[in-house]
View 1 (cartoon, rainbow, N blue to C red):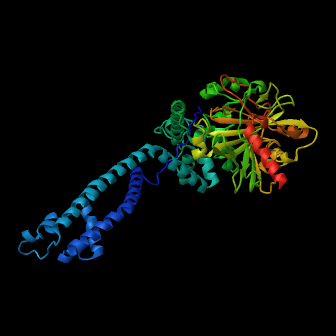
View 2 (cartoon, rainbow, N blue to C red):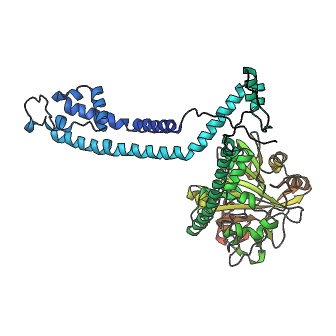
Length: 563
């Protein structure tokens, strides 16, 4: 007859739960006393000044006065002997001490009794109760952890031949076999062969099983907590959107947190994935450009994606309204970055820079400046598509977005919640036979970020932001729209230049080698055209500048020639 039984080792705790409670309470007590020691010393000095002139023996010296004050916290105030009998008008025979300033002394005593014996002691009791409850909650798990640690440590110290005989996963028993217990050797041998007896507990009660049960309970609790937090997060996001409040979790565009972009490149893949999850309800992982998570379903992920002022749009040149906007001017656009950083977030390529002089755009129409945040790209699978905006229905092979945020809102998170919070410069890219040397600093680094959630950086880059701007900054279209990816915040003033820049087919093909989060090629990362609805699209060109301005320019030119 055979039986299967697990060995149950006898484990002794190193310390008990009450010792743990004592240590936790002691730590809290020392911390509180360290903080409130200033009050103890202050009251001790006050009583020394007020009572020592009367030769009160308990306050004769400063150290003795401080120690006496500490004992008063425990209730040893001696009110009659110290603060009543020495009063001048109540002084009795045999009392040699006198309180010189009774009113001040009693006021300080009243303040002491309120702050120290009443407030501080009750605070200590409350903290002690809290520590005890915390220890009780984790006591079982801590006990199991200590048992496992002790058992493992003991097994390592025992000889192999002993552990191989004692720690058996199964044991064959012969009920009718007699074990002769004559002699020390036979007794020891019988003990090693039959370490169990009828009084043993059921294997289900072993510490190992208890540990597994506790782990399962913790997993269930974590799952429940995760479900509750998910529901609360969704509810809070709806409330935040309704109240037009912005949080750091919403500081995302194109799946990347702008403020965290500089530190993103320093994170591990696991940490970066966790950071992307925080950007807009897990948008960094759940939205895509096709399939069940494609643009047609973005409104299910983020309600703002179903708004009335979404981007991109088709720019119909015939219906654009002429406007006398000032030309776009970029300050510090020629500054060389200390470090050029590139990251593949699975949706696009994001370029950020460490710079001493931050580039910014001055906009006379909006009467403010916009600080540079990052660059990202959109491209297709062929030269006939790729850009997000279209010009009279025509798509370009690619489109570059230079994202800036309104400096009057102090931070990007605040700017995202405002209708004039962002300014994005849209630049079309058309294919040419020759390479564009201004794009080499970026394209030469793409092979290092082929896999999603990878990044790289260079310290010696000659990249200049102004070099990727089109040659003509005076002609552009402007309209109010949104981010083109979830969260789809309608906070963007779009400035789309009419003059494209160029890139060779070889340069554009480097973007096709990049991968998405699922390992598939990262191509066609552009959102479909959104309705213009009642919005107006404005066009700025030299022809739209007022005649008076043109006359002034011509007059200045003539005067300069006459000189």
